[in-house]
Structure formats: C-alpha cells, structure tokens
Image (cartoon, rainbow, N blue to C red; front, side, top):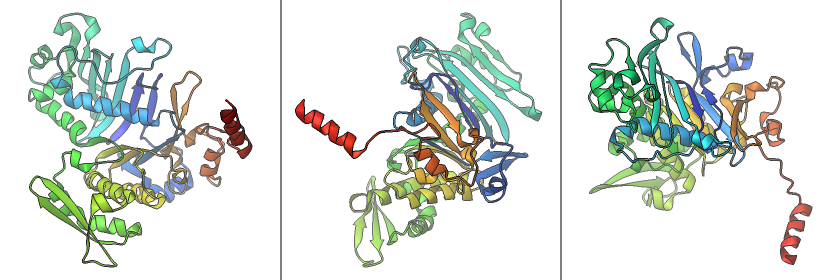
Length: 406
C-alpha cells in the first residue's frame, strides 16, 4: 500500500510534486459517510483507494506515470546494468535543470511495516539512496548511500544493525549504475528481496491500451478464477456477451466470445469485438488481480476506448475492494464528480509559465462546496487545468480563409 510518492526533475516535472494517498483529515460529512468505501482504514489513518489525474493535453499527467514507471523499472532491473549505460529518462530541460539531479521517494506499507525509500540520480549515475522504516512510529535507518562522500564504500554507505547480512559485500558489487536494493536482492539478501518483490509484484504501472499477454500472468489460472467476474462485469456494462472460452493452441492463447442472440456462433475476441470490449477484458486481468490481492495499480488513460459507464465500473471495483489502490489519468470529465470521488481524490495537472508541471487537488480550492458542479467548474477553467480555447465558428472560418489565401 502506497502512502506517498515524491518526484522531482523528471520530464516536465521541475520542482517536487507530491502524490499523497493519505486522505485529508478534515473531510466533509458526505465524504465521511457516503464515500466511506473510498478509503482504507489503516491504524486510525485513512488512505485513499483511488486518485485521478485530470488536465489539459501536455500538462504532464502522463509524465507523472512515466517517471514512476522509470523508477519502478530501475529498482527491478538495475542489477543488470553495465558501465556505459545511460538511464532512460529526461530531466526538465529549461533553466539548467538538465544538469541537476532527479529525485524519487516513496513511502509505503509492506507486511504491515512502513518504509521510506528514495534515490537521487543523474542521467548517467546514481548519487544517493536510502531506506528507512518506522518501528513504533519512529524513523530508523536501514541503510544510506551517498556517492559524493568519497571513494571508499565505508565512506559512502552506512547501515543499521542486523538488517542485511554482510552489507559491504553487496556494496562492493554495486556500481553507480545500480541501486543497492536491486543488487542486494540479486545477491539473495532476504530483507531486500521482500521489498524488491513489492516493487516487482505489487506495484504496477501500465499504459493503455493494455496487453495482458506482455505481462507475467498465468493466463489459464487467472481466466479460470475470474471468468464469472469478467462475464458479470461485461453484463453490468450492457454487453450482450453471454460466454467466453479460452482456446490454447500450442504456445498461443485465443479467446472466443459468444453472444445472447446466437450463442452457438463464436467470435474472436481481439479480432471481432469492439475496442472498448477488448480493452475492458484485458484490463480486468489486471484489475481483478490487483483488487483481490491488495496491489497498487497505476494506469495512464485507463478509460481509452471505454464508455463512461465502464470507467465508473472500474473505479467502483477498486472502491469495493479492501486494500487495493488505483492511480489513473483521464480526460473523462464525468469522473470529476464529488458524489463518486472525494475532493482529495480529484487531482489536476497544470502547466506553469516555464513549461513545468504543477499538481494540486480539488480540496485545495477551499471555496469549492460539494453542492457545486465540479465537472462544470473544470470545463469552465475554474481549476486552471484546462485550456481556454477560442474555437468559435467565426475564428475557425478566419483560420481557414487565411490558409486559403496564404
């Protein structure tokens, strides 16, 4: 379960932005009662199950997920990186930030223990890394790393007692291209392996359209376990599909669908069904696994090709779960609805004058009242997250006329 993510100097993100899954403490009566399923109660604190990112094109919504995706892959894969490797991200390019380091930090819960993990890097090397945990609500160091402190590993690394056996053996084998957490897991240090597995198995970042065949799914097992739920979901969403069958042909899997009108005729799911149906079907493999197993799922443009009713269903599915979390980006303004989402679940991205991304929530607008229409306010530009474009017929005619006479 994620509590907070901080990002600095990734793509269009210049200054630090914070994705805070901790619910605001001063919620309204409606949020506390009718939207009580939107939060996880954890040791007296409310943690958000879903957060949506809304904003104009090029405001940085996707860049936030791209940055998180890059950091997740660095944790999982960097033990394989060799000298000469350049990290696959770009810092903010203006005002000299291309020469400044980037920072990723995450506060999360795993096996009922709170951890704080962070690292700092440039495009060519890792500069700092740290891991803390909170026993009895007090911050305690597991290890810290600072490559600017000297050349010797004893100058660079400091370790807490008893967490990692022979930690300097790992440090000696950790280059500036590799995160210590990744290397320690690869070198079979059990403590680091369990946190590594969190980022590999319980922390997913995806980009629509999803293709579940590219991921590490036991397709036959997942389909057998979730077939009834998938059919029920399609039924809720007004689909006339009455049956689904999995065909295994050598190394390939094929799904056939059957419709109520003529249930004896099979359709190839990915060749003959609508884009919305295939997108929802693929997404359900992730969604149901995430919801049932309490995973954190982050998805860009999750409602691509989905009717707004299907988008509502996806969010309701996470709110019906017990501990899974969902961070998504969307252009679907129907989701900006305070009867479905709490104000701190509705986040906006905007572009500053210097081209950088800023992030804020509907809750930050203290003059907004829950009897107001949040979607209407967004479309009117009240929350500064949508471009105000003069696209009247007269303006468009003038543009066409200018082009014809050019």
